[in-house]
Structure formats: structure tokens, C-alpha cells
Length: 489
Image (cartoon, rainbow, N blue to C red; front, side, top):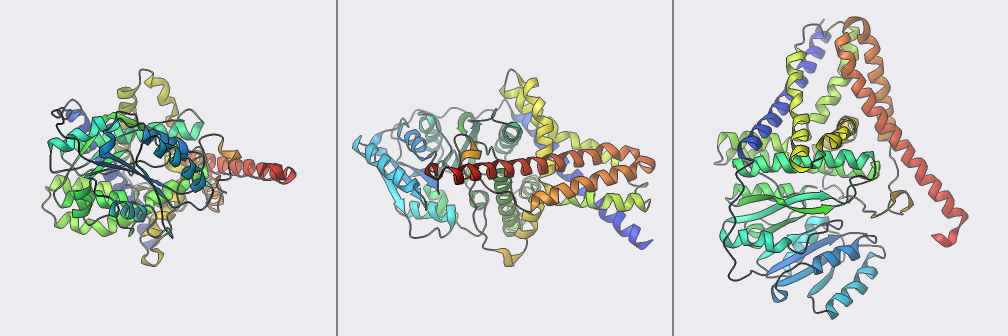
């Protein structure tokens, strides 16, 4: 009897915490609706343009480094006030490709510095800090390897810094270069649109803490230094610095009408690696900064919303816990008293965020929402992957962790040497799909209302596992072709 009570309590606690997270999504949605028309006023004309350094951190990006440099070189800004830093930690032929292209850009009169370090100490955070130490520029624009800013990017963002001396960072919206590539990229595009259109707009305009997304943003150099600089104590150096800067009084701004397109990971293993890094980094940031957030002078709503923001990957362990507990509780007849219906109603908030974002961005938004089942599979089917990352982030012995960058392909990923191998999580996902089906069979006679929920888990984990296996097969076929034709390597 005590075992049933313990499992029931854990199941209910997980459901309640998920409901709290869903309620936070509802608050964000309400905040968006209240403030969606309150766009920041246009800044006055700039009299003297401040100096800007464009930092381009790269690591083994042979397919995209040239177009990245070209995009940075095409920025419309006074040439005597602009410097480009390629922060190149590469260990393959990316450096040679970049060096040749930089020579041509320099010959055209651009100031482009090719900065190489002896090692990858600190990973991206270390590269950004190293580059910042080599410049006296007032503003720092940062773009990851797959981003392509429009020529007017600086003209549209820099004036806000000139108008507000306490403005520390401006974040712009991510667009998508390859959203229609496959089911994975379509699902990711839906998720990112929800984040940038609804969540970032709400946080910025409601006065809640927001974050720099790691790319397509501009920082005031003094803000970075005053907040303690870039540090590699987490894998989410962007979130970490964002919170430290705002806790010291700097203001942030989100400009949703300035869009910088980027590449979405078209390979499942690459996407899972990206999500694991984000999950570990944000959880580590939660452990480091939750105390300072609650000891700060922020208002209570600001502290609550900041906490929910920092906890953004904790729902994955809760979802997994609920799934693991459900079949035993069904077998022991311990689920009858749980009020899961009202709790599930709050789960409508996240889907509404995606619907609202699509309606705000695209005339054909109903057609785009057809990708929601794909997003649902991604969000649920990667719960094991992200749970492992979250739990690892909470273990001090796991830090410092390695920064595993998301490979960029710019074309067919299966033909690229950057394609990642599937890992053991694919087997775990297949087993979880079977486990969810077992739960559905147990629910058939005692709790049929749970069958759709368990079927969702079976679908999500099964799809993610199947795609992982298919991707691994594609990689093996490529390897076999290369072994038959060595000249193509």
C-alpha cells in the first residue's frame, strides 16, 4: 500500500509541476497579446555611428564559412567603424578556406581579422572573450556560422544603443534557410517561431528577463565587461551572461521585425546534440543563478517568470517520470484518484503559442500548422535525450563539459563528413515506445482515457527512434560508397 501511495504522489507531483510550466506558457501568451502592439519607438537619427566588431565564432565549418564571411562583409556600415573577427578554432580545412577568402576581402579594403587560438579553451565562450580582449570597439555583433544577416542589420539595430546608454543587448528574430528541407526542419521552424514571436516579445515588452539567443544579436561591450564577461561554467554562455547583465541593471531589447535566417539541423542526431547542449547549459545556469535571481531587487513577477525561464528543460524529466510511473500504477490500480483532466487543460497553452506565432508571421499559417504533429514528436520523443542532459548538468562531477557544436551542412547532410552517428539513446527511445504501448494495453480496461496520452508517447518515441535508425543507415551507405571509391574522400 505504501508503494502505491509513493508512486501516486510522485506521479501527481510531476503532473502538477508540468501544469505550473504550462501555466507559465499561458502567462507568456497573455503577455504577448497585451503588448504585441507596443513596438519600441524608433530611435532618433544617429549623429556619430559607434564602432562595431562583428564576431564570427566557427569550429570546423567548411561548408558555410565563405558565405558567412561574405554576409558580414556585405553589412552596410561605415568602413572605418567596422571590424570583422573570424574566431576560428577549426581543426580541419575550414581555416585554409577562410584564410584564402579573408585575403580577398582585405584586398577589397575590409578590416577582417582571422583569429586562431592555440586550443579551444572555453569553447565558444572562450573564443568570444578572446576576441573581445583584442578590440576596443563599442558594440559587438555576434553571428554563428550558419547565419546570414541582411546588409541593413547594423543600420536597424545600432541606433537603439545610441538612444539608450543603459541598453546592453539587442536580440533579433531567427529566420530559417531550410525550413522545408524535411519533417525535422519543419517541426523546428514551428518551435523557434513560437519562441521568438511570442515568448521573446512578451518577455521584452512586459519587462521580464529575456535572453540573448547566442547569435543574431548585438551587445554593448561595456555591458559584457561589467557583467563579468563571457564564462565557460555552463554550455549556455548566452543565457548565463544575459541574466548576469540584467541582474546588474542593464536593459535588453528584442526586435522581432529584424530577421536573420539560419540553417536548422536537418539530421536528427545533430538536432539531439544541439538540444542536449541547450538542456545541459540552461539547467547549469539555473543551478548557478537561481539564488541571485531571488536575492535580487527584481519584482516578484520578474523573479517567477525568470525561474520558469531557467527551468525550461525540466519538463522533460517530468514527462519521462510520468510515463515510467503510469504502467505500474495502472497495474496496481493507483490512478483512479488523480485529477489529471483539469491539469491537462493547461497543456493547451504551448500549442496556442505556436498557432499564434504562425498566424502572426505567415499568410498560409493554417498549412504551416500541419507540422504541429512533427513538433509534438520532437518535443516528446527527445525527452530521454534531454533528461540525460539535464541530470548530467546537475552532477558537479560532469563539469566542465565539452561543447559539442551543431554541424552545419548547407546541403544534403547524409553526404557530409560532418554527419553524426546515432548513439545509444536511439535504443532507449525504441524501448520507451514499446513501454508506452504496454501502458496503453494496461489502460484499455481500467483507464481508457489515458490511451491517447500513452499513444502519443508511443508515436513520439517510436518516430524519433525510427528516424535515428534510418539516419544511421544512410550514413553507413555513404561510408560504403566511399570505401568503394576512395578517390571521392
